[in-house]
Length: 299
Ligand SMILES: O=C1C[C@@H](O)[C@H](O)[C@@H](O)C1=O
Ligand SMILES: [Co+2]
Image (tube, rainbow, N blue to C red; front, side, top):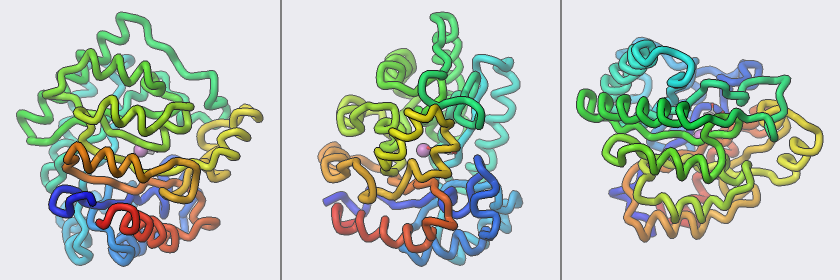
């Protein structure tokens, strides 16, 4: 059993309103989204672009539903923008997160990313960094992580992601090996490991001491295969249903939960299953995900 005092459960707004594909869920409001999260039994969320920017209004809406912000995605461009520019945007987001009481910031390196490119197949087109770019990335992450930790009391966790410079297991290994564990943790996303052909359980076991935040999503292997065979983009796949809630695809979550439990993981497990809300009703899937987690973990 995972410890209720150590592990909190969250859900991402992306199942209601998809920031990467704004036409998905355009009919859903912010209030509906957070009300349904609470109704399904979740206590944490990340930040969607329909959320009010004013922190007092946002806090009031969340407090009414007993939901907190646990993390927010940050797109870094350490390879393609001056560090000072990245640092300025990072600090703005850290200030917002601190005000909201969040403890995590989820960084993804978006230089040369093809994750949002509708005309680029997701398989076989990711950018590979050279040695000097690797150094720039890892040094930059260390600097950002130090700022986050020492000035804002927030942990930088790195989000490996399909179509980005840190996608595959060897890239995650290298990124972790060349960053300081005091400043850079791992945002472990089950779906992105499975999508690139890695074993999510093996990756968790290998890196458990760096994992500070967890994204739980499942994949539908038949859709991944279609995306591969038809040279489709990441977002084509999202529309077609690449991702779904834990328990609804091919990933075995039981040993993943067990590994987190054995290690004494402390932090959030957040359901993040972007799919078309017109096809997969977000409340229905949120309830199903919550029930699945309760059944498998006792949480
Ligand atoms: O954490 C994430 C944020 C999304 O915008 C992204 O595309 C998704 O797949 C993800 O893992
Ligand atoms: Co994720």
